[in-house]
Picture 1 (spheres, helix red, strand yellow):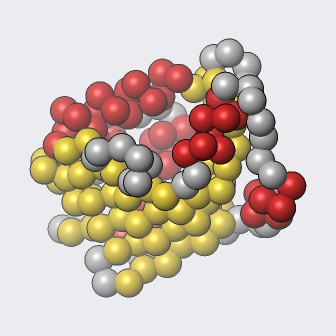
Picture 2: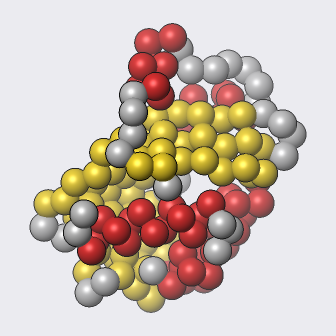
Picture 3: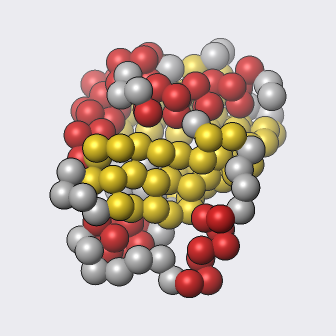
Length: 146
């Protein structure tokens, strides 16, 4: 695994340990975190990224994440993962998702996550789980748990 891929894995290690400041420090000062890239505007800069990560972290009790695949093309790290977490209300949310992270000079300059927002929101609200055909995406072995 290259240094850029290792940075992405380390970011998720920090996530599980709730080390928000360590996560923020991995971004360039003007870095962009585009969580749910097609449904929300990005958090830009350390202050906005810290606020987003803190708010998101506060919603969860237990965080689990499994990286299924990770690859690089130039400065971009691509990953496929299974996001899996428990909310404070006891509901479990689990979904496949993918992301692309641009790494320049050892810092994240642009992080983009892609997933089905409706699936996560529906599970969080207790309305529905994943459709049966999506379960095979959750059950495939991962390269590494992060």
